[in-house]
Image (cartoon, rainbow, N blue to C red; front, side, top):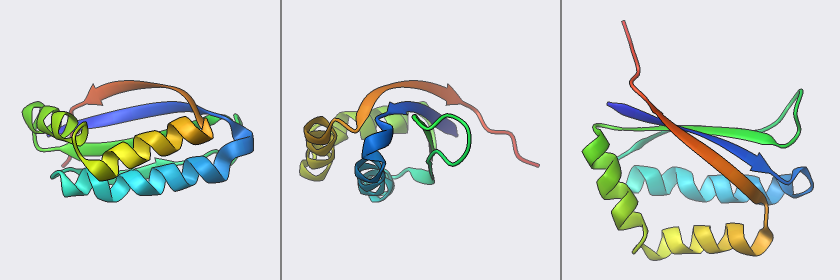
Length: 101
């Protein structure tokens, strides 16, 4: 299993737009075989940082999702929404291997 960690820098004045964007992606990740662990929006501290975590069974499965999402109309709509609203300023991503009991 591989878990993708995303750290977003968002426009705090467009938090509701970013939340709408986030809600678009949760079912899309699952549509392509992933498990979304949620988005985490600012509550205390920095008001312009948001996080997301989602997992795929393997890095290969993630790469398939990534490739397929570029051609998917619902994913394209989510990308366009972020571009139109400018709620997302930048992001960084990392991959982790979770450890469970």
